[in-house]
Length: 585
Image (tube, rainbow, N blue to C red; front, side, top):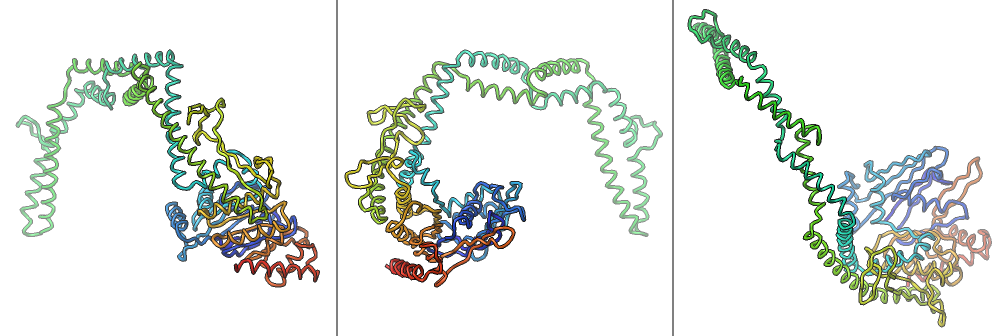
């Protein structure tokens, strides 16, 4: 759960800390006091879009910090991801998160003591937090969101089936598009293939080898300067090992080293130091002998053949002909040939290949059809269960006669999507199947079943949204749920039922509720009030926990706008007592 939330420099909030608890946390306050900034701060902390317009001019920087303490599988998954990214949870298992936004719009994020991309906050947020507000209610009116809600309710096996369909659909569309492109652009593809074959034929005739141009360049230089190289090697060999003719009186390095070594070794018995130096001279003589032998081999291998030089000139000219057309060097020419061969395989427009692609396209189309049929059946089965459970929750939200229907219909053909025949009907097919899902509300007996966007008022839509969330909560999901004024347009008995349902949800989840309804606030395990201070030159807001008498005064303010009214406080205390009894049941 989220144990602590600190917000500084955001909107009307200068600096405040929210100490949260497990169960149901309610946030209330006057209109404009800054309740929305709390939800905005949560959004920032968990990777939401940064709005520089929300940052206070002084100090020009907004910061949101939070402490998470997680348990179970969620803790294991989040800790593992943070550790992989270089962070380190605290010794007690808690994780510190922070997000800063400057007035210029620059944003930084920290997770578990390490600077991280903002996307890491979003990854953590997906695991631990779900925010529901009035914008979520509007999203629920979209057919795609209704289908996604039903798929989410379907469970792990349903999601596996949907993933299989998406994978097969992607392969089918890729093969279909490839086949269509080959047929549509056959002439252009054949022309490109002819040009590539000409280039490959030319390269194949020359048959360049990796690094060959540099090797030939070095060999040509040796042949062009063979006499100079021979003279240098012979002179060096003469100096090291003596001349080939024994009459030459010039002293060589080998002879001088031998004489010096023998002279020192003759005195080694008198001074051991000279003996050590003599041994080192012997090592030098060995090294000099190795160099002399290598020089002899070099001279023997040195070639001054003009015919060989002519062959090299011709070969280098052939290689230059390739590098002028295809790449800067021989290695680049070889790489071009490899790419050309790969491209030729892609351009293959032979009848055999086209037939093979067509057979694969038909096989994948059959696979998509079969998976779409299974997914439709799974959705219809899930729709029955989903509608029944949401209807039960609506009965507990002061809509005892309302009923939800979830209708799974074939998607009409003729749109931009491809079409297939699924269960004997030609339908449009997408990566999410061949169905359209519609949530319909029967507000009371005898009323027609109307789509939510036509048949639900604002208050009814709020309760439908809450009922769906309660149903989802029973099958897992993030441990912390945030509701931002989802009770708008609700009052009276319905408000009490919403408070009761949220309190029930808080038995298995941490629930944060921003509300203006005292009937909902009365069910809280912890009640926080956002209060505005207009005493100074700049308006600021802070958050405080209210208990006992202060809490009754806050509920009286919410009930009648009169926090000091004895009648209002009495009414608030009665409401608190009713809520306390309900929570114990």
